[in-house]
Length: 181
Image 1: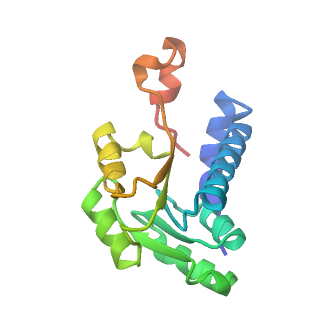
Image 2 (image 1 turned 30 degrees about the horizontal axis):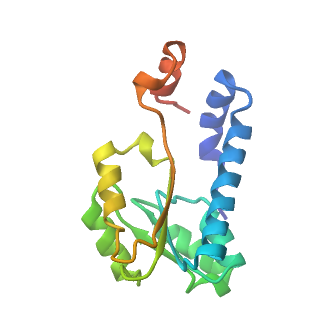
């Protein structure tokens, strides 16, 4: 139901400069999942917001295992994801909510989430994986501040790209180069 062929060119390009890249992705995905599961199971968090969710299955994994509501947020593809999930896993319909919003615009994200039933007064887990490649530091921290509450019970999982000055000089062309399919 989902054509993954669009990513084949990007994967070939990644494998060309680093053959173990897929292992890095698998390890990153596994780490984010484990951290999120721990937060939900042990910290009482019942709302999860995944920024830049795309077609990633993290939200499906979380709400199929635990009692939580996951809000997937992305600028495109959320309608299609909602259709796919509804067709495949009807029991997740209320637990997974797809929100179309631009992560670089905090007001767009928070109003979209509120419209989908997210409560600012309840503890939330914010998952930001892979977005630092596209957002400025100001946008990123502006988004994070939009999730602050009086309780201070919110958690954040942040995976980020190092600033260019912190990347070894011989690897900077790889980190700054846009991949093409």
